[in-house]
Amino acid sequence: MKRMMHHPDRQMPLSQALKTKRLKSLLFSLCLVGGVLAIGYLVWFWLQWHRPGMRYYVAGMKAMASNKPFVAEQLWLQGVKRDPRFYGCYEQLGLLYGEIFRYPQATYYLKKAADLNPNDGELQLELARAAHQEGRMDITEAAAKRAMTLLPNNPEAVGGYGMIEAELHNREKAIWALRQAYHLKKDSRFLIAMVANEMDDLQLDQAEKDLTPYLQQHPNDPNACYLMGVLYEHKPHTPFNLRKAMAYAILAGKGMPNDVRPYTLLGRLLSEAGFPKKALKVYLAGSAIAPNDNGILNGLLECYRLLGDRQHERAVAQQYQKVLQWRNDVDQLIHQMQFNPHDVDSGLRLAHTEELLGDYAKALEYYELMVEQDPTNKRTRAALIDYCKRHHLTKLAKRLADPDYVPLVNPAEL
Image (cartoon, rainbow, N blue to C red; front, side, top):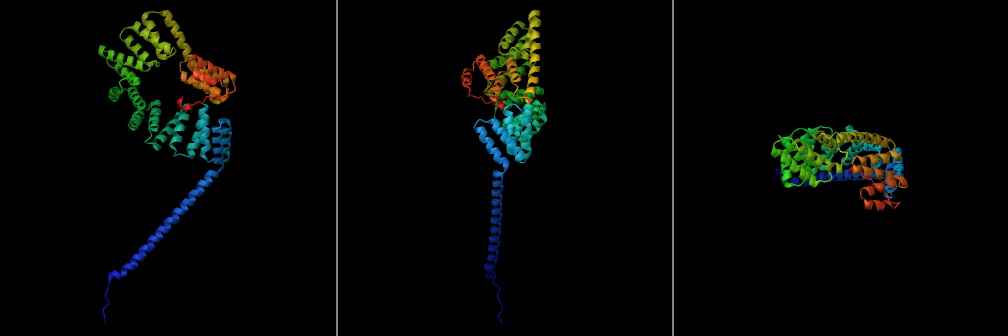
């Protein structure tokens, strides 16, 4: 009887067939799953596009494109009612209310949108901005931190969080975030803010260490010169240190001639060096730029006191009391406008008071806002044109002469 010989190679075709069958089965399963997922996504996309909120969202965007913001507002409000789980209408309402300074409403709707869409970093940034304008620092900090977490490589998100922590006097967090932002983008805003916070935290040696190499590369940066001048002011008042501080203050003044801070710094240094007459000249020059600045008024009071000029000292003290009242008026008017943004009397008074205080950018924004809210109101348009004439904004004044021209306010700049 012949022995059956075992030949392994005769088993190969069967093994390969099994493997091929399994591979085909796996590929079919993957294709099936992929097809189901693709169909599921298409169904989801179709449902999203045809849901009520999306229809109102798109209609509102078309209204905005046609310069009909209040029509858009009503459409988005309808979208919120018809589809309360759709975040898009909440987001657009929040952005719209932010543009017309209705910050409580802006914060409310943007927070609703962020709760429904928590992984949108840009939305968190918008929420942080609106809440910051409202003064809700709890929401501001949380949204800014969330934005930074979602956008860790976005210098604006990281730096913005640092700025918020600085405002809350959480300087350790602020300095860390601003340093990270500066590593992401060599933007002088982040470095200057970081150094300023180090100085506020009395980390003067570290501030000088961070500022020195930047100033070597940018010797005419006025903000850097100003901060270095302040750092030298904090050193022992040797003749060398005082001269260095004054030199930096003068450089800063040349670079930002409309900024009153170099004048107040130089005035202080001259007064500390025993030259009240020279300090007075500097403060008076600064008062031509910002007559109601706290630093200028305090410096004038000190100089007149040292010089024994009681008459001028009393006059400055009276002016200082007026300024305090104006600042109090601004706080009250802003509060009023948040609840009644169409109050023309309060809006124009707020703009005028900001102008008196020397915050011309804010004043212009408020004047423009009143025109934007009611382009047909001749009183608000005339007030804005008069402001333009006082500040030599001739191009804007000419555009405003056209009754169809409406200035658009950008609240992010406020």
